[in-house]
Image 1 (cartoon, rainbow over the protein chains, first blue to last red):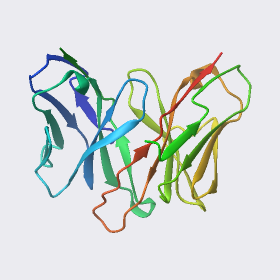
Image 2: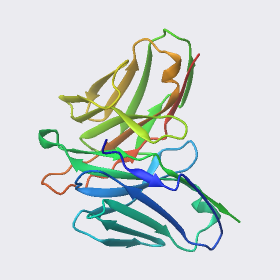
Image 3: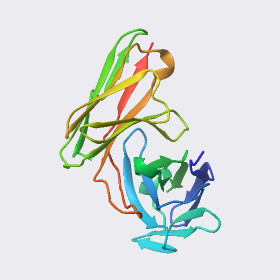
Image 4: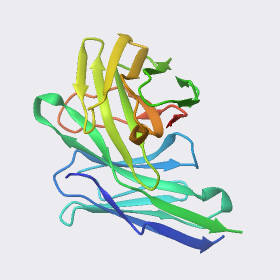
Length: 114
Length: 117
C-alpha cells in the first residue's frame, strides 16, 4: 500500500513546546500534503510540499521532505492549546492515465495541554 | 469549509435501508471525492469523479454507489446499509492539475455521521 504512515500515533505536550510528527510512504510521489482535523470535523489543508522541494514554512509550521528516505516531518513550533487536533499526511502519487489522487495516513493525535 | 456542504450531518438508520448522502460545492471544482473515516483510522477513498462523466472506484467501493448529477453535486448511496458501514463520511473537492507534478489540494465538507443499527 502507498498509504502514508504517521508516527507517533499520539503525542501529548505542554503549551509552548514544539511538536514533531513524521510520515513515511512507499513509492514515488508528486507531492506530500499535511492536513489537520479537529474532532469530528472535516480535514483542513495545512501545507503542500512538492517532490523537488526539501523544506517549506508556513507560519509556525515547518515541513521537510526527504525523498531518498521516503519520509516527511511536520514541526509545529510554540504550540498552543488550539493546535490540539489530528494531523494527517497525504501522498499524491501518479497513477498513469487515472491521474493523481491523495492517499491518507492514519494520523497523529496531538494534544497540547495548557 | 462552507464551500463544501454535506447533508444530512447525522443519520441513524437500520440494517437493509437505502441511504443517500449528498454533497454540494460552490468552489467550481471538477473533481469530487467520497471518503469514509473509522475511529482511529485515516480516510479511505470510496469513489471519486474527475468530471461529470467520469466515475471511478476507490479502495472500498463495495456496498456503495455514486451519482455525479452536476459539476457541483456528488451523491453517495448505500444500497442496503449494514452495521459495519457505520462511520464518518466526508466529501471533498479539488481543482485538479495538469502535468506531471501535481498540486491538487482537497477541500473537505463537514462530514456526515452515519450510524447503522
